[in-house]
Length: 410
Image (cartoon, rainbow, N blue to C red; front, side, top):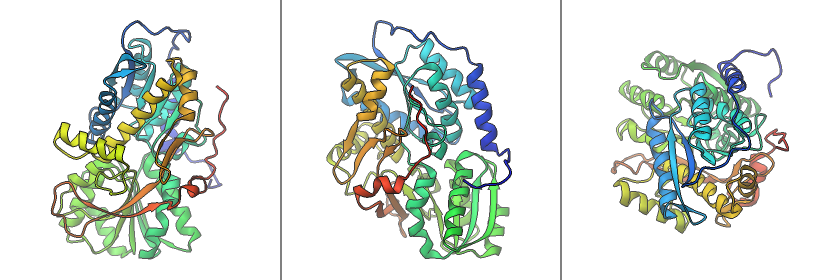
């Protein structure tokens, strides 16, 4: 961690407000009993805003995972109940409704890092197991970890370590363009540290509000600075907006652009004329290394929705699959039984295994490095897979390192 004066960043403010809001929520009866009827799983995902294109795929993947099981868990009917994430505090309130009113036995969700941070602070109070399927803020499985919360997405700091060797080759004079919320601030900090350690230079550093409609002033500053690389940290629709405006200024291909955690929907929204860049991704539907079960998932998704599965669809599918299989393994819907089963859940292949690390509940899996094709001829097929990191499954623990989690006993 960087030492020095404590500054009230937006991330800290969000987290503090979320924690206070969680503390203010009335707590449910801990001894609640599941009502007779289907086993109910909560979905807590944003239904509006720029992130909605991603959450739609997360939800579709989750529903497909349940359909693959015949909409049953432990031989009983099962269903998903989807509530919105309108804001971190609104997400906490809806989380409580899912538990108290809908009687869900576990929750899948966490569209944005601000939402995920708020929700994981609430899960222990509600005594509800939660698998966070999208948020990537490092703290989720770091200093804020708890026994009830699990997380799929590779933390920002780990993705940065995975990605750095690929982008250092472009040069070490970087311009940072990051969003002023948890995800962007985490990217800014992680890559600043890596660049400094490599003897690089920051030639520009702009933090921008989310939902910025006009990036022209930032683009002009970048063009004037002439960096070797633009290090991005802007999410979803913001990335699409920037890349379109960058291309309109005639700058596409002039300065390399790199960012972690690309969503397929982000790049599809840019269009083939403006799309460019090198990115990390958890999954790509045309990756020839996908195991048979994931190839079948991709085929089933295409058949059902008449379009390819985005990475977020796989993320919704694998997290839901891990939860459903863990409930099946536990033979129980009791919170601690589900948690212990999730801690022992395993999937994937010997070359690319998946599991939640017991020490911090972080899913351990490899990441892809993908690059936008120089010429795009298919409306969906935008990427070439440039590498898998780490190359060896044996190096996963080393790459993820110590998250700083001090896991509570309960």
